[in-house]
Each structure stands twice: as C-alpha cells, then as structure tokens.
Amino acid sequence: MLCVIILFYDFRSWSSQTVSEMESVGLRAVGSHCSLSEMDDLDLNRALLDRPRLKIERKRSFDERSMSELSRHDSPRGRSVLDTPLSSARNSFEPHPMMAEAWEALRRSMVFFRGLPVGTLAAVDNTTDEVLNYDQVFVRDFVPSALAFLMNGESDIVKHFLLKTLQLQDSEKRVDRFKLGKGVMPASFKVSHDPIRETDHLVADFGETAIGRVAPVDSGFWWIILLRAYTKSTGDLTLSETPECQKGMKLILSLCLAEGFDTFPTLLCADGCSMIDRRMGVYGYPIEIQALFYMALRCALSMLKPDGDGRECIEKITKRLHALSFHMRNYFWLDYQQLNDIYRYKTEEYSHTAVNKFNVMPDSIPDWVFDFMPLRGGYFVGNVGPAHMDFRWFALGNCVSIMSSLATPDQSMAIMDLLEHRWDELVGEMPLKICYPCLEGHEWRIVTGCDPKNTRWSYHNGGSWPVLLWQLTAACIKTGRPQIARRAVDLIESRLHRDCWPEYYDGKLGRYVGKQARKYQTWSIAGYLVAKMLLEDPSHIGMISLEEDKLMKPVIKRSASWPQL
Ligand code: GLC
Image (cartoon, rainbow, N blue to C red; front, side, top):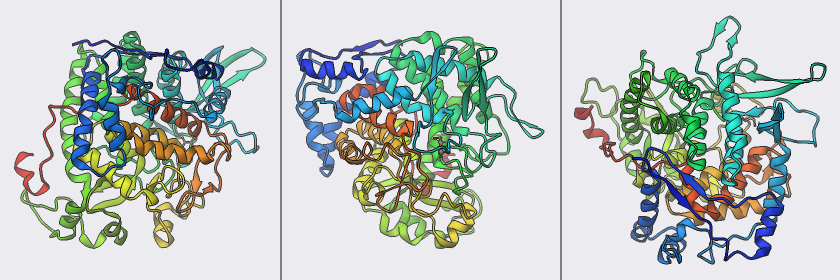
C-alpha cells in the first residue's frame, strides 16, 4: 500500500528571533514528505507512542520523564507531540550558537561538479598542509552531510551525489591486473578541474589507491540507505524508480547475494573495508558490515520493482534477511545469561545437536568482558566465526542494528541499557568510542601489525568519534530515550567547536584531541547537525530507521535452535 504522510512544523509558536536566527544560518523549515511502499512510518509513530508504556515497565532510564511527557500532551491538531518540536518546553528548540557555525562549515565543504553540488569534502582543515586524501568526497562521510541537507529541505545535493556515484560505479576498476566486481561503489571521489579545457571530471577511488588496497564494502550499502532516505524525505519516487538506480541497487546486491562456499548468511569481509579502514582485526564477519548489510537489504526491498530480474532479487533478499536476522540475533547477541552460557560451553561437539556450534573456546573469553557486562543490558559482539568470537563492542554496528531493527525491541532496549550502564567507558567525556576496549601490547602488535596510527585508545583503536553522535541519537530516538542523546550532545557542545571540530579524540575518556586528527572534519560537523535536528524533530527518524519486520521469526534460544534450521 502506498502511504503518504505529511508532517507539518508549527511555526506559530516559534519566536520570530528563533526563525530569523535559523534563516540566517541557512536553515530552512521543511515538512517531511514520506512515501514509500511500506508502512514503516505509520508503524514507527505507533511504536513511538507505545514506548512510554514500555519504559515505565523498565523504570530505569533517565529518559522516562521525557518520553512520558512527550506522550502525554497532544498538539492542537490532535497529533502526538512526537511529530512536532514545539509542544514541550523540555523539547523546545533554541538553536545553539554552534549550529550556525556548523552550517557555515558544512557549506564551506561543498564540492561542485560543472556547477552542481555533488558532495562534501572529508575535511577542510586549513591548519595543516598535509591534505592526504581528506580533500575527497567519501561516500560514507557524505551520509551525515546528506541527512543534514535533507532535514533542511535541500535535496538537490543528495540527488546529484547519488547520480554521480552511480555513474562512477560503471567505470572499470582494477587493482594491478585484477578487475573488481561491477557493483563496487567508490570509497571516495575527487573533482578534478582542467583549467585549459575549462572542464571538470571525476576521479574515483575504489580501494585501488587506498591504504591496504581494500574495496569499501560499506559504500554500496550506504548508497542504498541514502537513496531510501532521499526518497522518504522528498517523497520523490522517480529517482529510485529509474532503470539506472534499479540497476545500481541490483549490482551492489549481486556482490553479496551470490551463492558460493558460505555456510553462514553473514557477509565475509576483508579487514579495513568499512569506516575502520585499516587493519584492526575487523575481518571475517564484522558486526560493522553485517548491520549495514541488513539495513541495505531492507532498504532495497522497499525500493526494488518486482519486474524482470527485480523479482528474483527480491526473493533472494527476503530469504537472506530471514537467515541473517536469525543468525545475528542468536549468535552475535551477548548478555549476562549468554556470557554465562558460553563460559560453561563444552567444546569439540559434532553433529546437529551441538550447542557450541562455532566451537568457541571458553578460555578465549577476555577477562574484561566479565566486568563489563551488566546484569541488565547486552550488545551484538564484534564478530563470530569458526572458533572465533570477537567480544569487542562496536558503536556503529550496534546503533545501525537498532535503526534497522536487526535488533529486536528487547535487544534494542538492552543495547541502550548497556550504554547507560557503561557510560564512562563508552562515552566518557566525548561521544562516542568507535569500539571498546582498545588493543594493547602484544595483541596490538599482532592484530594491527604494529600500526602507529592505531595505538591504544586512539583513532580506530578505541578512539572517540564525534560523527557517531548522529547514529547514537538515531538509536536513542528509535528506542524512545532521547535524554541519552541530549547528554551526549551536551558533551559535544562543551568542546567540539572550541577544538575546531576534530575528526576524533584519544584517551580512555576521550579527553584529548586525536594525535593525527584532522580539524574541521566534515562528518563531525554534519553529525552534530543531524543529531540536533533529530532531537528537534524526531519525525526525521523515518528517513534512517526501519520498523520491526513482523514476519521475522522471534529469537530462539541457542540450545533449542537446531531443529528449526
Ligand atoms: C579515515 C577514516 C574513514 C573516513 C576517512 C575520511 O580514513 O578511517 O572512515 O572515511 O578518514 O574521513
């Protein structure tokens, strides 16, 4: 069924000063036009309205007050106040001075191709001559920029970006004599200007010039997720329905849905193929990719047309989603009970009756997990493979699991419970740790290959990345716990601007500006804007969130699962 929901901002109750302040920084007041052939917005609104009840039962989050306040009052039009930023004093929107600065910085990072905006540079750091590849438009880095623009009613740049990267997908990509799959999307691209011919052309990197020569598995997934966000936000179905976009999606998915030697529905990856783009032991079946894979599959499912090979693709996606959600919810999930079960595992079990299916050795459980795991709460572990469980906590994977509903409602709540419980470790003084804990000593030498950029509590090795604020905020809003996000925003507002919007922070608490962090890192800026706009108008969450798929089977306890496989 096609549903069209138009949400209105109520400007009347804004002070004229607030509106003009917003206009002066280029903020446009927009409604969210949502129309996709799925009911997820309606479901979402229902779910959000249901949430306060859920929370009262749990009685432990410092969000309870805010959510019950949000649900109690109805706006004059009879809508839930969750649709409007204006009905609750606690929720009122007074732009922080940092917002204006952030918008200006975001606009300074815009990249033009033949006069049209097509993306944003990774960083515009005038404090250093060492540009490296930060003068490029990274696909993953552009996502928060795109969301900020969409939330501000500026969809053109997003459309142009989607179309340009789609064209780049078509180019030939090679590493030495090896040709990469057709569906691979670039990690980044650059606009090169020929002053003699007075023309622009695009130069893309698919991993063939990147450190480690790894193709970005996440780029294609982010592209699909962004196409859906654009469609949800603008209501413009014509873009996703073009033969070019349909083909682009199928090409990306054909890389992941092909049959091979796999015995698991998860996607096998090389180290460094996502945001963590250096060797960090994030290979095999990392949560960072599996969560994005799941989300991209669900987004594609809502946009693919069931004609010709589209029908076959839809069937494959549906089957994979079923298997993937079962696998992740069962085998990647860790809470106190599960940890205790693994601790008591028998090993070397053969046949279908095996409880310890992957033959994980209890001795391989690191000491820190026993202290880290609260009695209430849980998370998706970093990786599960043969005799291998990476117990590290990863921010992106867990937040995207919530946004995409890969996590069941109970698991989503548990992830947030854990975050609250382990606030000092995971957030500390700067949101948000990219992963926890860091690798040190011998383990660091073996796993990172002695990477001097990824030393303990730095960069990808337990560093704190302000960009992750937008994903944290989305997860908070989805689970009805915006107060957690507000607490994180307060931390960001106390430092980020003063420190010139660094790329990342170092240290156990995230107190120090990262050793080699860029300043004016665009996704730190855009991530802040997205978080603020999400808190201001929670209905924006529909762009980047998917409701629970009612057709998925509920979680089955590991020991009881084999007969159902
Ligand atoms: C670093 C990050 C990567 C990001 C790039 C551009 O390489 O690890 O995730 O996309 O910088 O900001």
